[in-house]
Amino acid sequence: TQLLEQSPQFLSIQEGENLTVYCNSSSVFSSLQWYRQEPGEGPVLLVTVVTGGEVKKLKRLTFQFGDARKDSSLHITAAQPGDTGLYLCAGDDGAGSYQLTFGKGTKLSVIP
Amino acid sequence: KAGVTQTPRYLIKTRGQQVTLSCSPISGHRSVSWYQQTPGQGLQFLFEYFSETQRNKGNFPGRFSGRQFSNSRSEMNVSTLELGDSALYLCASSPEWGGADTEAFFGQGTRLTVV
Image (cartoon, rainbow over all chains, first blue to last red; front, side):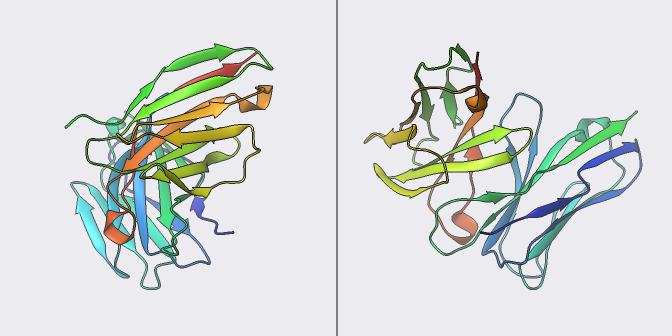
């Protein structure tokens, strides 16, 4: 059974600070996605990373896929209150299981 | 392009009843997956359908079932509801599966409360 461990579980920071969220596994993933979810809503896809070592930027968000495709990180620069939400990573094992394995998420609160 | 539509948004049911949830995927997407989300367990995979065929099923009891129609719309059914089935049920659609194509777009979910 593949597992994705996210850390930290909870993060409360002041507006303007930087933060990094980690997603780690002992298994290799063919692709990994990051989502943000707000209360009572479905997760919204932020990015998909496919190649080991890949770095993708989305405005103030930087996503990195580890060289061995077992881990990923999300870095937010100068966090804003609008960044508040639950950040989820999800991986596809590429073995034809047709399911995503999700981490339990990082709940981020950005205080104005 | 319309997103993934799930109906209803909210449901309250009594223990022992059954419930059917509906999901309309993004136009052109043929893969539909269902997930259960609870505070303690996070998102857990229920099943995935592609071209009306169930390709994979998660570790849930047989009370949980689903199907997909020829227009890719999907339904999931839960029979003999238990209190522990209270959760947010999420449907996701994907154009295909594999690598960069394994991008799941989620609906807003159906919040099921069993009393």
